[in-house]
Length: 339
Image 1 (cartoon, one colour):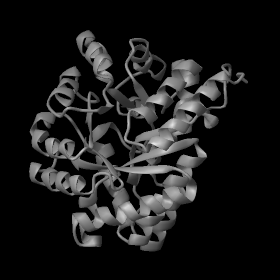
Image 2 (cartoon, one colour):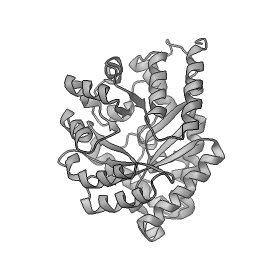
Image 3 (cartoon, helix red, strand yellow):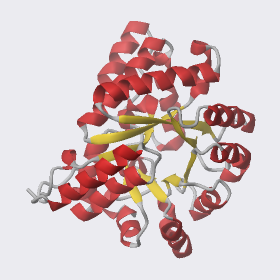
């Protein structure tokens, strides 16, 4: 389990820091109490949650167990509303949710119908809770490229209509980014951001492929880049943001000691980074708690935390009005007196 934050360090109120949550797989943003309630209602076996797995393979199997309670449209709609409410409660002004329409074909009839339903839920939830919500259509790198093509095409068709990015998730090992060059080209041509996972379970060569082959605008995780000085320099030069999830990295054995997490070195080198929760129902912390861990356990300063918050807004396709207000409010947060 992650290290407990020290109580010795204080600073400005992190809930009041405007931030974006860019690396959240929607299903694993479910509240634990909601999962228990829905599993009981539907008569399905409750999947293991926080810490009930060892290594990435077991984690992936646990994740898929969450899908059993989302077969009913009203349950998926509820998930969107609760995710938006939780984001607002953590001080988020923008939420970019990773969604996988192929999971819901049996419920909605087609990938496009599933995506359109999600777009509707996201827009309504965002409006209710005052959080801009964008969708990252995400393909499974362990699935066939033909599935990735389907998802790229529907994402491209809905670009700018609630869909903002195209992602690539699951275990990098033996499933390189280069296999997915064509679907990512389709997404990029439509104006979507390229946001693949890379540099989590594989070294910097995976990040190189993400930025050179998939033309990544952001890289989800990317922490192994820290071992390659030339790659770090390229991330700085191209202003590519790494959407980092500290607790996830510790629990999936990417880093041994959270206090030595490479986000601090990356920030000091000038790499843009955002702080994220990845899969809160499985790893524990929500995004606000990840910011607190970044302050107390990793040792980021308020200036570094504000830089992460700014990157989590500026490095996205969030609405311009959201970006403008967030810049002003982040500056005001830094200008305020620490606690």
